[in-house]
Length: 122
Length: 384
Image (cartoon, rainbow over all chains, first blue to last red; front, top):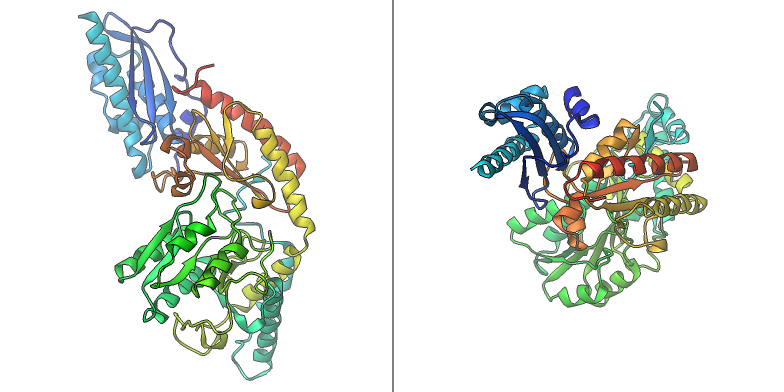
């Protein structure tokens, strides 16, 4: 049902957890629909220095959260905003069609966190 | 890796003794039970012996047992055939909100054919209240179908009380007993049930074989047409190896010691899991719960993720919610007993069998504790 990569990220998510004193936090989703993702960011010189996630969700949601963090870390915030759901799916090998929304949720959570970061800098 | 199977509500291991009983009917005694030669006689004899075993297990007469391809067929047969046979008497059918999907979908289809269906609610433990049933019956009601042992909550409905209500109002009563069969008593001489769905693969018998008990005198016509098999009630060459296996499985399962054995392990499991903080048992406790079934809600984490971790450790479970790769809707059964979307999605079902061991339960408890801890650590809804 799930690819090896999805299971690898689900079993050992490198970016799971939270950042103490983050520069920004973004949360999307609602438990009624299933998945909730919370993203913590550390940003320096517009570059994402550190990123962590907490996710209430299924196997795909946890794997997508971890993949999204892997893609975003080290990128400028503008480049990170360009990460697409497809990039997450590609990074994970493949994803059941019905779970595609988990990847979309991943990009939305990151976007929210970056928006909150930008707002805090104004 | 050693694997542990705790999804016996989905299906069970075929008992080696059952295979043994079946084997001759694949190769040596492969006749068609309708044939007039010795091969046919062998098959026909096996068929009738098996029918007698199933009949005896629910205190019915052999000619009240019709073999089918399983629970789904029996349920479809009972609902659709009673509906169309008796439509001159009325067009109203009553079921509960916690029926198996095959009942639900058959009802949706019957609605499209002009039948009215009432979906009865259940209490927070999953029981249908006989008073609610009585209130829902109208002069147009022709059939009531209520699940006996629930596949998700493990709730065992009171067939005697529900049957009494149906009898009082002269309405046919069908029950889907796929999960409960041999795990709690069914006796058609003191429970007023007109139709019962039974199957083999939940009790260590083969897949693809089941039965429908039809009380003598019930106004029902065949649904599947063809030859005169099964007293003209269900056409199609009988699956003799499957039927022989079904009967063998029933013979073994009828030994009451298995119920006590499973109930003991179930209670050890429930007690152990409830020691984890913020865990809730879904469904009743004690004798009104299926002896092999446990279902829990773990606050703050999703059932599918728990099941995924358990699977990595070799333990097979099932999500109380249906948030699998196949559907995203939370379980309608758990919603019907009052769980929120979030709670329904946070549920896990563990179902045992007579082959489950104490060691397996101990190991599962140990792993489950670790899994819940690590998933909660990454949950936005959990604060240590």
